Image 1 (cartoon, helix red, strand yellow):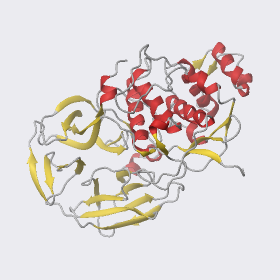
Image 2 (cartoon, helix red, strand yellow):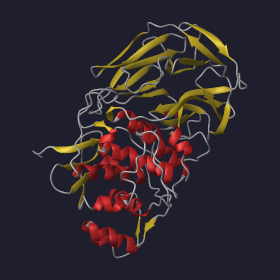
Image 3 (cartoon, rainbow, N blue to C red):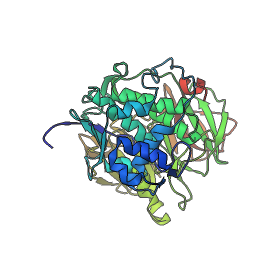
Image 4 (cartoon, rainbow, N blue to C red):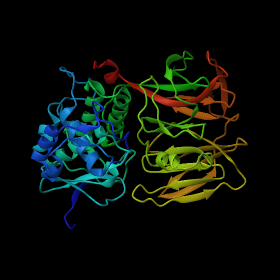
Amino acid sequence: MGIKGWFCAALMAAAGGNVFAAGSTCVPRAEMQTIAQHFNQFNTLAGADYCYDGSQTANLIQALEFMRTTKYASTMNNSTDELFSGTFAQDWWTYFIGRINDIQIQSSCPKGVGAFVYSFGNTMYVCPMLLTDSFAALDRTSVMMHEARHIDGFPHITCAHGPRTGLQGACDQQISDHGSYAVTVETYAQLAAYATDIHPALRAYAASSAVVYADEAFETPAHVDRQPNFLVLTNSKEFYRLPADGSSNLQRLGDAPALGHIVSRAQHLILYPDDKALPAKYIFSKNEGEIQQAAGDIAVEYNGQTPQQRAELVDVHIGAQWTVRVYHNHLLFVCDPTSPATQDVILSGQVAGSVLYPNGYDRAASSTFLITETGTLMEFGCKSRKAFVQAARMTLDQKYKRVQKLGQEVIGLTPDGRLFVINGAHSTPLKTSMDGRIYDLMPSQTFAFFASSTN
């Protein structure tokens, strides 16, 4: 367009879908008239109740109504870390309409861009990606608040460090500057801690989203009080918390809807069920329930396949800038976050087992490891946006189904359901009350602010 806009990359596709605060399916006529009063493109829809139909317009109106009607606790205490300062806590609607007076849906946008504004005017441009079932009303609302903050004069910078290194417009300097990414963190944190009428699973999703942006969108990462833990899934579909301090004491949490492999997507967890007739979806460990929305592009692709096609997928790795679909005899890479182009690497003479994280699940890392059905360890990743698979330099003393690292502790899960502490190439048993019954192992964190806040 000739004049540079403030493009905001939505690098974390969110929980998504057609569920707003109170679960209603229609916007009352009086509400539509109020919305149309500020955004006259909706004038023709304001003569009656407006019912959501899954269209781009419906998803946009749903976000505006979410912004207007979501209620919060009467007292909202600030966090002791940097997740919630209360700077933007009061009346999101008034803040938004004081800066944005026109919303336009774009027909296309660069990959990863959810919305943008220009450094002049008061129009917000919304991209098709943000109006799909991969985003919920609460995600769209957070993006809208983020864009409104740009009107106050807070542009982004190119990331020089961390998971978003090299991405233009994907970082702010620090959260204490109260720029647009600070708004993103604060809106998600406020929804998670203090919204009074959203589904518990969406509340849990919002908490994870706040931490993702706090960790990834600032040159100086925001301070977040957290406790790392391993999350254990048993073959009876029970979730347990295992401290990442060498302890073997398991704390019962909740239940999983099905058995399967759980993939980390930053702070979010996605279940790929063993029953290939079931869809991949976001999962929560403390009986928060489920959300029916799409769990990102890979899950959308997977859910559109037949059970026979789904059975070809062995595992998934989701980094900040690259992803890999692991199939039985090949790996399909997306190494460029600005392009949908893929690179396919054949596993000659090998059959893929699962992705292992002996160095920890790190969204900024350029590689991780794959174990084959025969126990061979291979390293794979993207360097300079080019895919590679090569023999691993490290070794393990037995075959593992999962390997995860948190802090200094590396834990492996064997195919027969037992845990081991791994020290270099050697491992020793970690005896728990669930020996022989452990089905999956993944990293997890708890956050002091969300644990202590009252709703």
